[in-house]
Length: 472
Image (cartoon, rainbow, N blue to C red; front, side):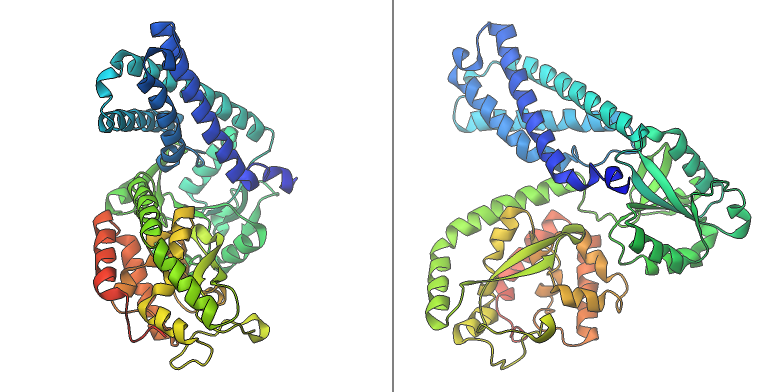
């Protein structure tokens, strides 16, 4: 039954890809119908620019729609908000098409009425087919499929209300599996299938052992000591954590407020660069990495030849790292060490005068040229140009239990360069203090992100961040 519950959750990427294709096909059909309705001709039969715009806008929609959160889970949130985002994204795509036609000096040949018909038809089609999709998902969730396992922390008035709404609004597919409550509140829970958790440590253990998808914290503001302890215990939990506070405390919060199941909720660990703000960052990353790969292609070939000529082995060094929300990916670097095998799969950081480093490798490390292949990771979407540097998996396992909030670094994409690196915290982290300082700067970047800050970090990296005496 558990496998059936996770049917859609485990195939999120495939479903997202299918929905993106469906959006493109929907917009293509809408553009064709708009042309037939207005001109009684297909788009290429009116003027060539209409067919060009049709293909351009459909391709651009495929790239831009994900950045409007059109393919993330909308459970517990009003569908009207999602429809509004879809309409806004579609409007942006058409504006981009108009700008493109201006650049190629064909804007005068574009029928404004056709664009209007296309926008209205496309918006109606997108809303209609999404209504059908989400109605089907709601039907499946009512049958017990595609549900998300939830732990409620605190079972006072707010916790009980959230539980009641999850039961009544079963089309959202939330299944409360465990509750943390004091003895008095626990007596109000009459469902024997729901586990009662007695300690805060028990919450952490249950989440790790039972593949919980979400944690709803409904503790009152008066339980601040418990909230702080809970935040520490859940610092490594890469699941969605929602805090549903009382109304009076909302004005005191700086975290993002959302409407969730009709109640105000706070996304405690959602970074500032998420949502619509990620559109600019992701587009910037794609364009920057594409241009960079084109410009440094000759340098790539020279470095690759030098690496291959000076020592036997592959040109690239590949190693698994943790990306956004703990998703593993393979990071690429130019190989700077001789081929060797570490005992017990350990990862030993490079040190000063490390005999494993080749002569060309020492130069590449000192100048950070070994990091250039990571522009491939950025273009593929695994990394960002600017973000916390990804650490070896063994180092994550070691430091996540030593350092508070260490794993929050993985709520954003890792970067080629970052705020810590331009402030001198790069190279070997052989002490806890050095790592703590790097994490401190990483968290500052996550909490204070802006596109302008990214531009500044890139500029500082270009002028002073490529060479460092601490980079071995």
